[in-house]
Length: 158
Length: 155
Image (tube, rainbow over all chains, first blue to last red; front, top):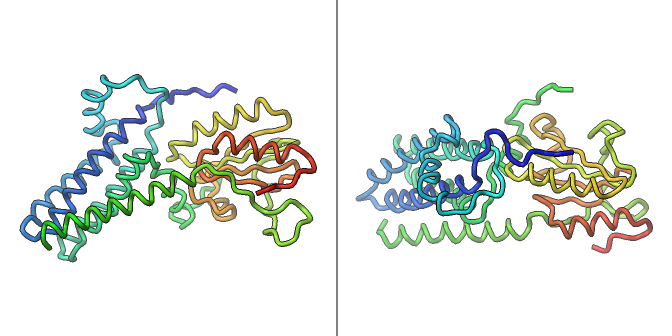
């Protein structure tokens, strides 16, 4: 049986990791800024920017993410061609997870919950860091946990 | 909070993430023997596997069952890896199950990540499981154990 090595909507698997590295740095800055009272407002603005980026990746799809454009323009020309392409659903799901966590933290911070912004940023940072540095696939872990928690309704197939 | 304290918090978070990453990387894809082969006391009760697929989908000697999800970046590569093993080993087949379609199986087989691969023997008993893409050497060793009659799992 021959399986195609390149999905039709495939992306370079290094692109999401590159994006996760940028996200890691931005979230690290968010943690510091929102923990220091004098720079809290700047940190909240940065967190809002991160939420917008996650929203683009999670709603429009990873292929429309600005970091992906950066990767194609500046990084990919310096690398060897990818050995294989990857489906776009897994990194898009990871963006949706990031969107939920950071948007939730942003809303809580804006209604005055103390430390909501740095705690939310720290949770998202761990995920982005594991993705960027250790190539951990968020969609391989969290999706199953959501399935087990009964978040997805059982489809009646077959 | 001072800047120094904030940086210390950040370093702590990064250290925690690094430990988590090292642990995940060390554990992924390792062979784990499950319940004892028939007749040995103290094993877990055998999980029934007959409803995973139609009877003719199971291999006469062994079956590789792969649990996947639509959001799993590693699953296509694992599918090709297992297909190659099944193709070159007589009596071995591969079954792939999408947990989004059969979520109840995630609980029954205690799946915490995808791909998770179960190695079933000719009697459809679960002998070995792999969380994450199976390490090729450990998969071959586990398969040899199942395919060679009379050998006991040494692990």
